[in-house]
Image (cartoon, rainbow, N blue to C red; front, side, top):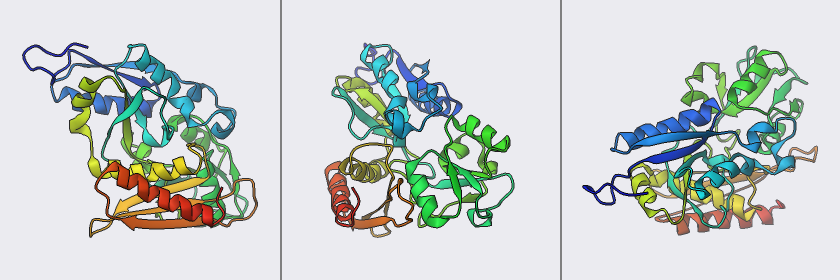
Length: 313
């Protein structure tokens, strides 16, 4: 893609963003488009439907994981039909295919989980045996640790579909990412935002990652002003935990990192066994000074060692 003659290497003739067509995915792509346009780039969108959007009758862990949400977008990048793809980072596999990389991680929205119900104000209000919807193995094991008396049932589909299933009476409550609800102006549906001590978030939750072909240094340059280094370092540590525990986005694993007031990165993780009826979680945490991605990933690996020593597998 040719650069403008009058400003070499800074303004591309046009950038095309590959995106899923759900309302949330489009909001995310349009958000990136608007930021790039404000910096002088011409930007278009290429809407696509992925296999992850099409398969709604089975849990992601049984049909290939959350990588199903990104595969078609990567094909569009490879074929030159698009220049970048915007993802919810928690949906991005820990190891990208050869020839692709994360060119940018943007500042994080609220990373926490939200309790959504039409009848109850918080999780503790639910009567024993209430049906709660989620298809996240992480949320299953964390919910089971908090309320082993609840019935946890699968819940698939985009954000609007999940809310409609709740409204149709299939569940007493559902658990969703607070970030998605807030981004779509649906914050009034939230009844309770879980403290991270109750429900530790997924690796990358609330952050947007932008994927690019490795040969496209001019696209990397265009995206550089959108990057948020503290978020990037935090999610690099979180994703290193996921990578060390097997690399799948569809694992019963939580990992969340925050910077402390004195500037250290504090990383916590939790692992549960989804097939077991026990509510015991394996927990681990560590912190260190982190100045680059390599140090962040090393912090993640130290937490993996603790998890494995505690019995996580």
